[in-house]
Image 1 (tube, helix red, strand yellow):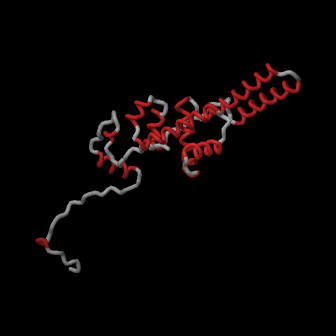
Image 2 (cartoon, helix red, strand yellow):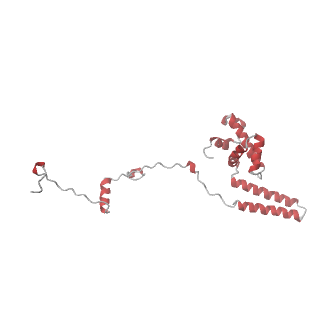
Length: 205
């Protein structure tokens, strides 16, 4: 969903004042704002709603196709972050709500059976929390799409690294190092004397 300009605007202005939304969104986008805002509010009010429940809500209330509803759901879940409900917070809210309901049931219980049912609900909430690892923090996940790979080009100029100075006579030092390491043979210039007025000597004589 990274790179979705509309989603970025929705994240920042989903619950902004109407006057602000009119300045930020086009008429077509405002229809999407209304749909997403209603869905987020609906899910916030009833966190036990499943994705099919939200799908049906979107289809019935806004007359959209099932395919469009399923395309909306991941974005709607993402927008929960704008009201402090990331995935883990969303699960935590569900567990807390279940525990709160159970506590009220215990307070109002008139029999041991009702108490036991409420305690079972609390145990279920605890198991739900463990299953979704609510006791552990999520690992940081870098936004890989935002990381730019440096454009490196091969060079023997060390001065491209901050703090280093150019190496004088680099090529000569490289040549001597190759010879020292046996990777090349030293070529020795031999003096040449031109004889016979530049004509080839007769080796048979």
